[in-house]
Length: 367
Ligand SMILES: NC(=O)C1=CN([C@@H]2O[C@H](COP(=O)(O)OP(=O)(O)OC[C@H]3O[C@@H](n4cnc5c(N)ncnc54)[C@H](O)[C@@H]3O)[C@@H](O)[C@H]2O)C=CC1
Image 1: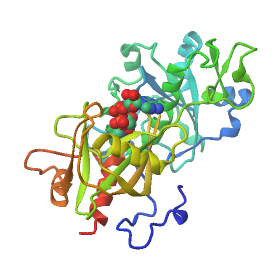
Image 2: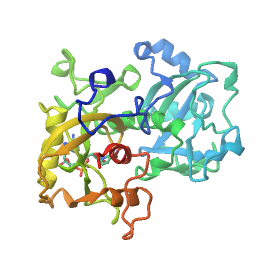
Image 3: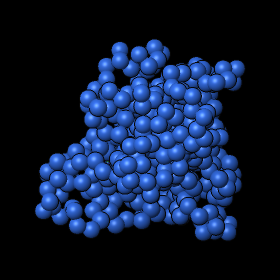
């Protein structure tokens, strides 16, 4: 599906994915995950203890961040609201690890030129080593005062919209770490037999402690981190002149977005798009084309972004799912995109795949 050579749109389709490399926010992870090292406990222990190794911290699944101005080049700093993940050394958190034995997840090894930013200023000189390793730590048992001892400017970023403020260079690392820590937070017990399940494979597996448990035989999805595929689609009207947008019940009052929903077991992406749009808005959808994807670690979605064509136009809103749904003409969509809509209506920010799908629709709609 990700292979663009196999996803070329049909001739005469108005949808042409002009961006060969769609890189959404939280994509393009700069870390090499080195999955083959996850079972090597000796290597992991040695790597964790290295001076150059960096630990990112989460408290109640909120990332511990510092303002982006702390970059090495303040002149190029982003607006002050931007945040970096705080990183600390093994020396900084050794006693916390020993005392609390928190969940620790190995994230990967950074290459020298692409490592995420956001050092606390208190870590050791990592430039001596070309490829520092990165780990994520559940630091929930640390008080805010303890966290502030690493850096007095630390903040805990809320999930949404807080995480939109994470610097793009750190965003994929945040997503990887949060998705895994959120999984451990909810799956402490074996889903097959209910016994305690312990962390294995550097945080990428949980193992049931009951020797008779069926989850210990074969590949069991109860042992591995969840990824929940979720479709999100920009639905174009039959004549391509309008876009279908909806308002979720928990959305800010004036925000509209693409319709979205979880893929059900045994369902294709295309079928899920058609079902979700029909259920939520009553609109029938025909052609569905893949556009791009976005990890959405709240807690474990993989957003599969599509461009779709409606076959019908009458709308019947499912009020249990949506507050409202309606067609918007191109001019209105542009006004919403540029935040100059007369009624103050707007779209999700550029970090959300919904925004990118609408942008693509604006670029390619055949008007
Ligand atoms: N990145 C983006 O641009 C956007 C992301 N999203 C995300 O897409 C996801 C789905 O959107 P909505 O349907 O509007 O969410 P929602 O939160 O309104 O609906 C979720 C409901 O779906 C059901 N459900 C079915 N399978 C589920 C599963 N595997 N996990 C959790 N709930 C499941 C539950 O009843 C739940 O209440 C949400 O996580 C939302 O945050 C939604 C819109 C834009």
